Length: 18
Image (tube, rainbow, N blue to C red):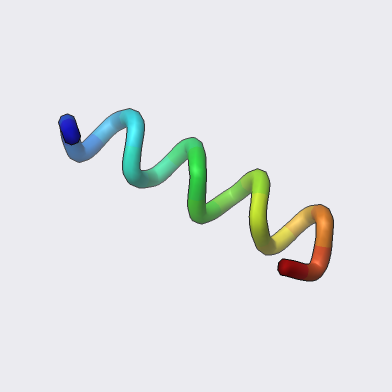
């Protein structure tokens, strides 16, 4: 997984509260 993808997932999870 690329750093960009990882960062996107982290942001998404933070936004959703996962």
